[in-house]
Figure 1: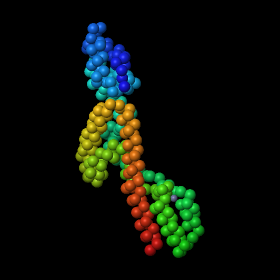
Figure 2 (figure 1 turned 60 degrees about the horizontal axis):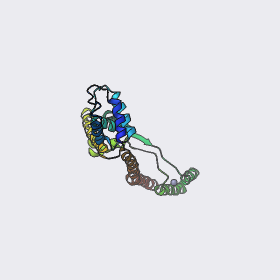
Figure 3 (figure 1 turned 60 degrees about the vertical axis):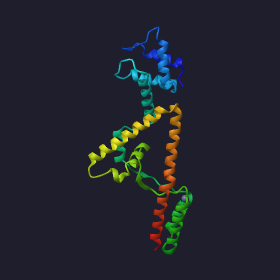
Figure 4 (figure 1 turned 180 degrees about the vertical axis):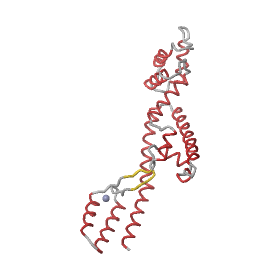
Length: 238
Ligand SMILES: [Zn+2]
């Protein structure tokens, strides 16, 4: 949290910019005005945001809200949120291979299978698939829709899924996706702006994103994988 002393330091960086209203008489009032808007943000962030503002092509003395929005912009960058065009690229490059995992039991069963023929072979295949449907470690190699950032996945979800997003008109698809993504991005920025401590927010957000990913895996995907393996095993034993 910034103190009035911190805000004073920030003002030292910008006080000679054109249109600066600061003089010896009103400096306390201006510190107060900036303090009200910026006090919930940490000094390091405000200082970086001020430098960020100074480094851009906007030479005039800023309103406190401008420094605040630069601070939020920095936070979005630190969250590695893709730009709308990048996000669309992630939609187009979504199919990535999820490498499988094999535990030591599965490895042993697979070794054994290679030495067997006929009925014994089939039994061992069944044993392997039964194991892999139960095992927490084993997972087959699959292709699935995987986006490089959770916000891309969320936009696709909000638009009603990938089938609703992709049509035979890629130009329209791109425009619609980018609009929806930009709206979501604006909302996220507003949420970050509202919370008192952006640092807390980021920690919570990162934790939540991790949990979301974990949950998605535990529920839908795992079950689907298990079903596929069961179907495969049933097909083989017939
Ligand atoms: Zn296993």
